[in-house]
Amino acid sequence: MRKRMMALTLQKTVETLHQWIDQNWSTLDQIELKTTRETVDSLYNKLISEIDHTDNSDHLLEAINYELTHFFLSIPCVMKMYQRLIWLNPSNRFYYERFTDYLLQYGPDWEEEANTLIELYMKEDLRKACEFTQKIEQVKNFENK
Image (tube, rainbow, N blue to C red; front, side):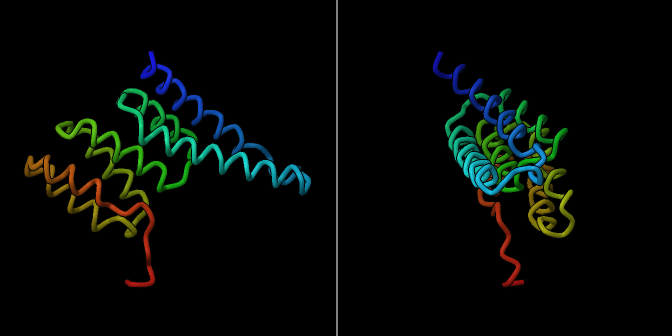
């Protein structure tokens, strides 16, 4: 029952976060704006925690699919969902393909990582692919490039 509640909570958090982000922020006064920012930050933190603790791939996929139809979550958050999904399913090549497709949407930013990951899963070295996936940085530091 606890696992089912965690999964329902994950999807509910994603949907609630979308509702908060998707509102017309320009109509909010300063107090409402502050409250909205705090609520969104709190929901993001809750979502990250739920991603870390879920063990249900179907619910992660639901959350990813919801994001891919609404485009509202931060890149690091979506990457974390894919990383968790692959961690739970290291032998599912389709999840690697979806993750590399996601990475490549952002042009050259994660192209090197995506290409390395493609090379690993095409060689059927899924153990190394899973390990590599977990090491991909969710935030890029472009100062060192």
